[in-house]
Image (cartoon, rainbow, N blue to C red; front, side):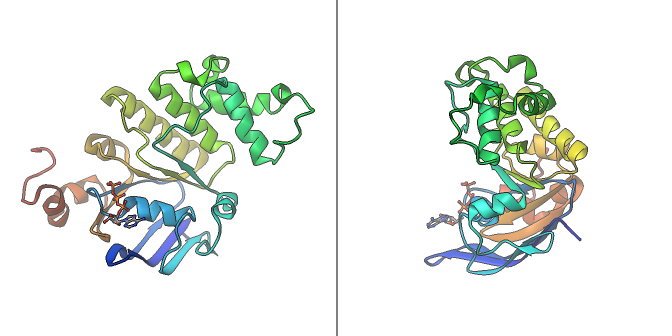
Length: 252
Ligand SMILES: Nc1ncnc2c1ncn2[C@@H]1O[C@H](COP(=O)(O)OP(=O)(O)OP(=O)(O)O)[C@@H](O)[C@H]1O
């Protein structure tokens, strides 16, 4: 059974069909890119997957469990994590403290302030930071980190509750090409090491073609293509959507 099974989901805003009869599956241990031009329905799809929006119809199942109708917190508890384009770290706290906060929140211990928080989950936090290559910066404030390093901390934070599925909304936005590749390589390592499934949106085609195991393409709310790099590169519908002609990605 696939980890995630989406069947005929629909979502309209007034007269706009933001998502139109979309179905796809995501197996465990796969890095799946969700592509599509502006307004294609990518954010709407993400928002339905994590419970911020309810589909008008259709089903979203995680290991056979229906997610439609559940609250974001319940969906998070089922094992769906998400990273956002906007930084989710507290700048004035250290890298380690940011991780400790997430671990405290995971175990609902935020209000036990009479026990010194500094001692909580230090080891677990350091293990996570080590996995994303940030253990040596554990004592630095997040506000002074390089942008790519903040993204690594956010990845560690997203992994803190051991999600089965991680949704990443443009994880490399605003990064230089080298940093972009490094971050996606790190995500790919997590996919392999943890048998994690990741669905991510990304504007850099180079990054997608280089690292994604598979890609799906949305256009005007519909899923128009699903396959590996070669299939997507050569798909006439995809070329039409991106270039309005037979031009290839290489030539663009
Ligand atoms: N809350 C909303 N109210 C009305 N229309 C909306 C709402 N959210 C999305 N839409 C419309 O639904 C369509 C899909 O939007 P969505 O944001 O999902 O696309 P996207 O692929 O994420 O685009 P982008 O790459 O620009 O973020 C668009 O036509 C958008 O205007």
